[in-house]
Length: 224
Image (cartoon, rainbow, N blue to C red; front, side, top):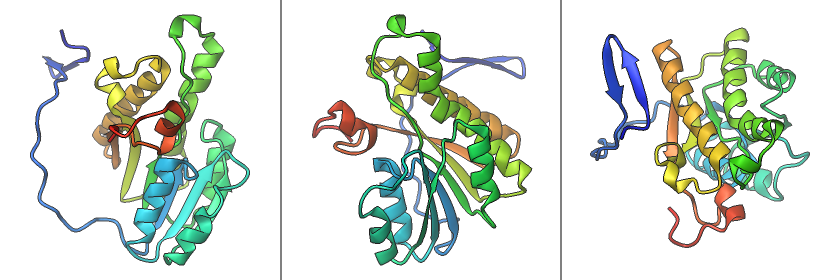
């Protein structure tokens, strides 16, 4: 039985998973010396992405996170690779924080939304405000970021929301119902933004062993 159903142009559509051949490698649309914003930039996935971008050229990297300071050594490592790095304290679920963050960027070539919160536990034992807090960084953050980009006239080449396979295969979510729901929202939001002509994409990642949120949940060596 289909989990996700859409009705478009008089047709009933259902989501299914199908094999896809790897595309032929093409030149990246991202300039090697571009300016990139990474929310959740102090996290495992955000940090890994920052290293990848820094290794491609001499970019300007703006890392945003709620922690007062970035992880020890991260900024120095990125600068050693040739990047110009700025760390900004911001909660992307707070409109004022997002407005200040986006408004302070003179240009933007790419936005990578990797912010998120994992709060294990069953939904039946959650209070509404707890669920809202767990959804806020990913879901509300994406909405606020998109609105702020338009408000400040920034037009990045691409906006990537880091989603999860838990949005496609809920059985993998276990006691992470809110996390799966937030990622499902990111997928739907990115699709809606594309239909509106904006360059959003979502990427459904599996767990990375020892990295990001998986590290705190004990993802083993088999995680990918």
